[in-house]
Each structure stands twice: as structure tokens, then as C-alpha cells.
Length: 110
Image (spheres, one colour):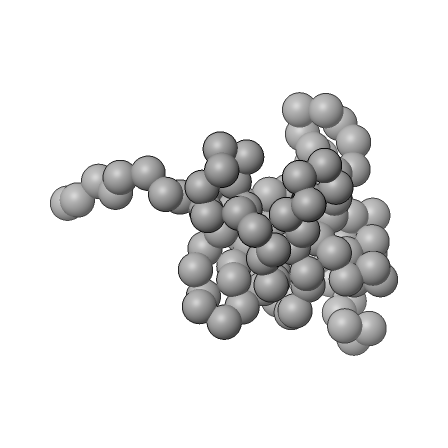
């Protein structure tokens, strides 16, 4: 992933960009997190997804305490460069509740 140019991204006023985390082979959406420039660089260089915790105001590598790491497969940005799609190989569950994804609740139908 050395060709991913972080300087082209449109970070918000806090220096953050939303990152949709998706299982690479099933395309299942696992969670949404926020990344800053440093967490993106750490993710790209280390191969494990790292976020910026908005509540704790610190870097947070997914799985450091639970073991449920997210191994980076690919990272893309959208057409406006203001959202990331991070495709991963999820080890274990993605959600802190113990569910496979953070979207395992009931869907609202139209």
C-alpha cells in the first residue's frame, strides 16, 4: 500500500476522516471508526488497523486488548476523498458487544 497518498485526503476540522471497515471477502460492513493522518500511516506501515479514539483522544489499534485484530487488505477513499473504505481480514468479532459486526441489530424497514 505504499502508493496510497494520505496528502490527498480531505480531513475534517478535527483532522479526522470516517473509515468504513469491511470484511474483504464477504463485503460485510463491520464497523465505522475515525482515523487521523498518524493512524492511517500506522495502519499502512504495520498492516493492522489503527483508529483515533474520539472519546479517549488517543490512538487505538483494534484488537490490542481483545485480540480481535483487523488485518489490512486494501484501503480506498471515496470520490470526494473524505471517507475511507478499509477492507480487512477480521480476526474474531468486530464489535465490543461481542457481535460479529457493529450493525447486528434489527434493521428498520421502509
